[in-house]
Length: 205
Image (tube, rainbow, N blue to C red; front, top):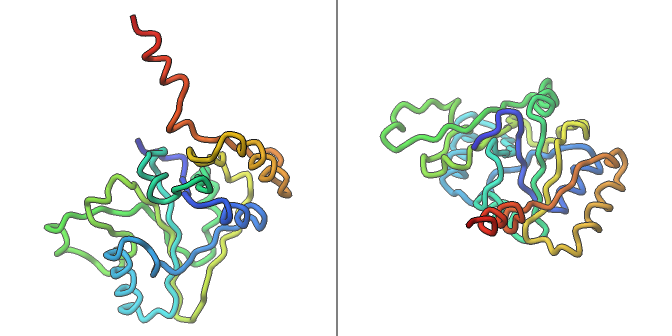
């Protein structure tokens, strides 16, 4: 299921602390992404546009799945930041960014590709990711691109399903102690263990 009103950013606690402390998102070099097809597309786009800088930041419009946690935020330090889409997109404006939902193409559709589309293209087998991507491109060299945003743009922070229960309160208190985050909604996902789901079976007769 896709959410048109939310953008989900899967990352880890270290990055989350930086994001909340500085109230910013940072676009980075996509050269270290796992999908080497994606890396190659971005490098060729950068070359053909004669850019010195091509940076990116990825979200998904899809509600949490085991796949997203396992691939993008595996382990006890994983987190998902849910942003109000309209509020976050407003923060992108005026910063020289491009953004949009990734289009997933089959091989037979690849003959009609346009260069401008390349940063927002992936192969069809990745379609379940429902990715939303932000890019920054420049003729001058730049290592990162920071995007300031208000904490109110965060709908909630979701903690990893692998985070041990005894640590949840400590993490919540730490995040809420950051300046401006006292009202931040922080929850641990019940993806791997949901009492309401279990009761569906217990109540069967």
